Length: 596
Image (cartoon, rainbow, N blue to C red; front, side, top):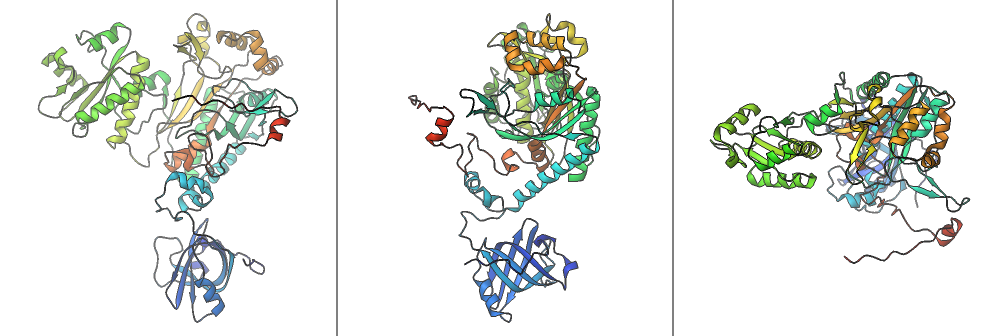
């Protein structure tokens, strides 16, 4: 039977013991990382969230204690009392490597079966198995460090915003379903049959109402939910650092957020973040082909349209004639890596993004190899290479099409080559702001203008006259913060004028009935005096992910979902009993599987 702690109380964490504790009697608790039986000596590495300390037993001490230590296996839970002493052989790999505990009393609090995988950072095991036994996976040092880092970030966040007069206010988790851009998670009502709550995609409407209520500055570490397809930087449930400010301009909000990020990186990482540069949306797309560019390396997009406007190459000529452009990226000293086979793979990637193909110039030998050479004289090719600053060893990748195809295609190829050619420096954080986002985007399928943001975003004042006549030129008072190609936050100044809000709803094609059904309570609130306000939402999970240098949110969330939005450990979602369904007046319809 397991023993109890009665009479023993932990005096220190394993990893916090040091030379200062030598000569003192201490009590530690934890899990057995490793047991080594040398016959007359037994060593146990005991682990808790702070680290590992070595326990020592010899056969000259209490026989019962020695035999108990001999029976211990990995992941047993122990409490041990003993004297801290200098260690003979120093272990430089652990923080307690200069000391050890000579144990006088040992209790086995819980025995453990052999785990399905070794609980060390060096263990090579499939992610599916680790997620199935996530509670064991979370015992690993690297994962525990990430969870502790997440806690530190949350603490600094609250400290910073509290010091800047923000109030932490909770908003509801069961809300009205409103269009936010993704599918809602719906919760059926037991009392109101046929009606549903939605889990919040964000507290957007509520935080605006808090500004109308006079709270002036609001902050919340808010849980949010979106029923959308998952990817590496997306989970169905996530945490936002959600904030809103009254009587402020866009500059005020951006300064507050920039100060927060500087404080966060200084306190948590010991890194000084310089003043963040700014790019408009159009500048970011033109230079990097992305509204969240990774600026840790160059390889910016170059516009060749003017240079090749008289070209007889049909791909270039047709794209320009149809109002498109011809653009490229130059991969310096990449000819050895970017073989013809490698370029073919990049061509397939370009087609997958939407391009019709990929033209190239590969200058590996004395003469460059140009995929469209027969449409260009040697002098024209030389002039083109000179314009691009190309030398032997370089590769030029060219896309010709509408800008909405060309720019994102080259942007993706740029990122692929940045990784493939190892151009991205480790341990560097490049922050920047993206501003002046388009207010509307043209939807080819519906042949209509759609809002790029939620419908409460304020257009730039100089753009207001063009909302009806030229929607494509309207820019928003919206801003994103980006680091290393990851969008950390998005925010905007909100519309507070009742008549302008109605106009924006109409521009989005909403009828009076739809406005009333979806946003009636918010529209009514504007009639009672709304202060100018704006705010933002920062992805807490993404902040942790980028700080840790991880590639997936699953690495920084305690109990994550996998790509099909299920949790492997608890096996949710799962069926519920018939009574629960009857209480909710819900019937499950079996769908016939479609033949493949």
